[in-house]
Length: 83
Image (cartoon, rainbow, N blue to C red; front, side):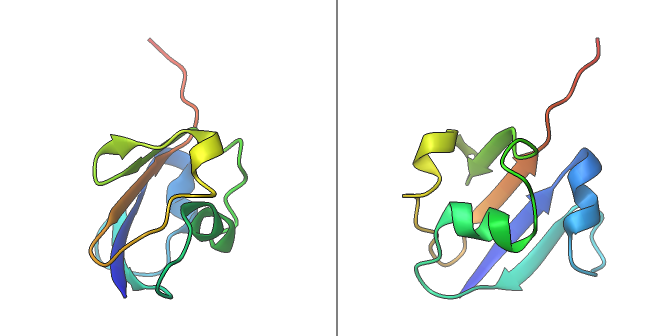
């Protein structure tokens, strides 16, 4: 199935090659869990501070149960600081 991933800030280094700066369309296995997707890209749990699927926040403990479906958009931000 096809989904889109968006990695921001320091996580952009984990994106596969592509034209878009922070977004890629990728093919994944049906029924892939969100936590497994994060692991596949070698993103450490503490690096995946803010995770959204289709614009809705998924907290850390729910990521293992959240099954991705065709067309989902997964957006991940690292912890950020500043003002």
